[in-house]
Length: 139
Image (cartoon, rainbow, N blue to C red; front, side, top):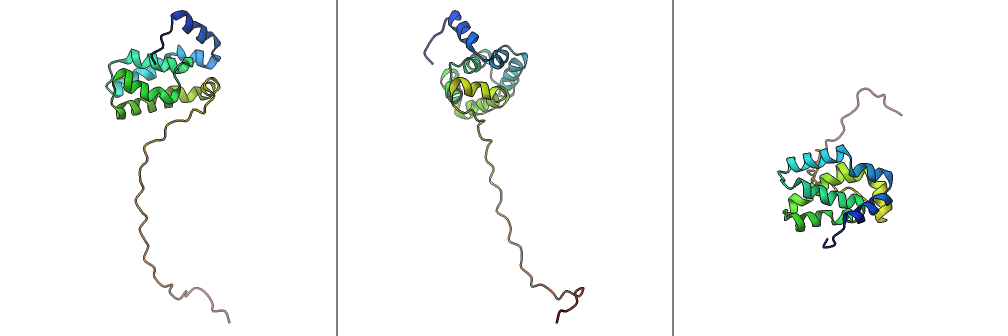
């Protein structure tokens, strides 16, 4: 993520984007989602989260490197970065998944939800069948 881009380079990248991604970058809904995610997770650096989200949408930062970038650049703990990346993926990247796949040429899949282990089924006690008084005997 050491590469620096000029404003002119950003606009050139933006002009080449599919319309769906152009709309997502400047969408009020995208901004609202970023703000709400940061508020829920008590993150004060909302503009930096927006910056890296925008870079994914522009085609600069691959979605699979987004969490790692949050950890390194924002110094977020791994579990917090994972949670934020999962929410941004769900609310921002997943709705434009086909356009992102087109740019990156990789499938964009939502990160799996936390797996919860279901309790083992209890064994039912086996009771021998009783004589069915409602059936006629067959002879």
